[in-house]
Image (cartoon, rainbow, N blue to C red; front, side):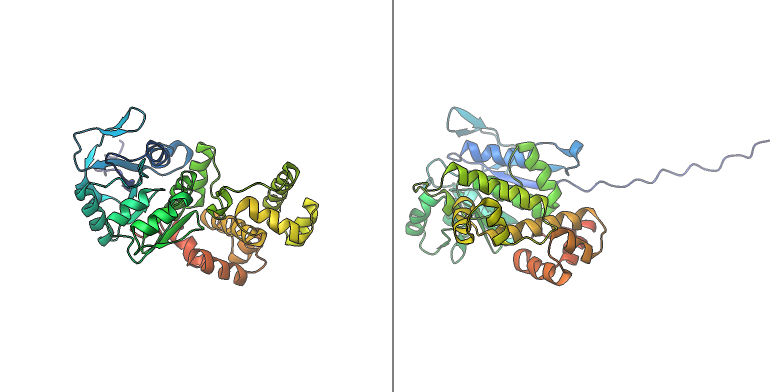
Length: 342
């Protein structure tokens, strides 16, 4: 006779982590482009490609009334401003008219969010909204290069940074114009969920996972270098990315481009907004981030594959660029925690 079966134990269940919560702050005057960028980054389900789940909400002082956008578009809020208390990240779009006054309840809600320690970010002219809220007083900030003087004039207590794609000060992020908003959104994803997640989203958007340099490269000025030089620089960058693990020098890259080191550095900086050495180090840090997130390789091997040569050198560059160590970075992502401030 078969033995009687014992009591059935309930199957063990593992609770999935809650989605990362992002609040898009909506009020009349915000730019449709920035709304679309925020929605594309955090409002598109890419879990089938290994990306985490995000919970993007459109918050407004009146969540029952559609917010008008330029071009005949409207945005329907789905949460009241109170939802900012639940958010991990608050993002303010840019403005069609950069002097548009934000509603007083919006400004108060932004101040409360920052006081709670929530990360607050603004795209392009959204810096003016944060400035209206007083959040940029005594802090560094950036906006579109055409608006720098206006921001200085209207908000003299803000320390305006002229030559960056995005800036952080006291957990408040601001970005330069238009495409720099994409850069900032992907950077915030990289900080909260790692380089691979940011790269997955960037591939879906057919954009670069990150750009180095400053917005100085986009200020209107005559273009002096020929198309041949631009093609040569693109070939050099592609070659460097394929050979990061090898010892690369600026002189060697210049020779590959058929230029003198001085001419190469000048053309490279004009095209990218950063020096060849800085660009190369940024690529190596990014490569090391990916290895730390997705492999259990020992630190010396990570350093070798990323082209740093030694763990000490890699650690120095992580400290300078990311304000953390390679070991702490790996622990943050393999342990389920996040290095982004909440």
